[in-house]
Image (tube, rainbow, N blue to C red; front, side, top):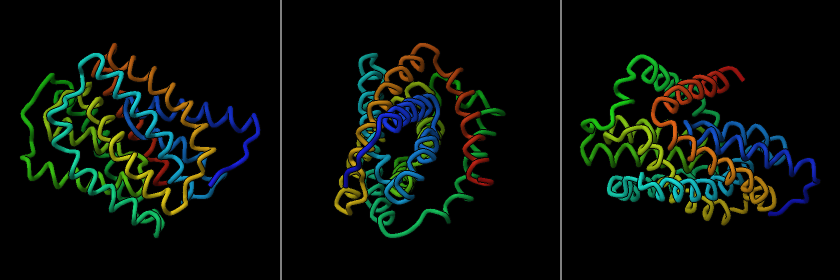
Length: 250
């Protein structure tokens, strides 16, 4: 599926892509921005699928930036790929057949919980390293579920991933952000393939938005590396509350 875009729409998509990726790198929930832009243009299902093209580009670039600074926890990341990919395949397959409305209220509650944890238990998020709260079986189950959600709708999956990586796996926020980008890059490529087979991707729109996403990811990862966990903590809380309010009331 392709589309013809005028110059103004193309510029708007690039700007929206930049904002989406920047927010995603620093906290999560950036896809709420891109879907607000894409849904009126493409419809809900195609917007949900097309969004993954730009996300894939942004997270591949972001992972490369973190890797250059040796901040990607490869051992933990690779241990989570298989359950995340299995969950993603199932979630993306379901997304080609059903709507996502039933998940909105439940996910908003999760976001509020994450925001409260970040604000009122900062020590759990700011430690350089802490003991993981989940064993290998718990991690596999958690990231299978997160992968399913990411494959199904994607919006806000960064919150779930960062929660699992920091609180469940014992990473600090900067390394957790790096691992988050690596996992999203891997499973999004798979999701793109599934949505492409269902002919739900508008490649023209997705590739134009990918220009903005890639640029936003570059600047976002640089800021995350330089400013560290303290800044990410506040952006995570603010973005969590903002997306939760949107899902509950708009």
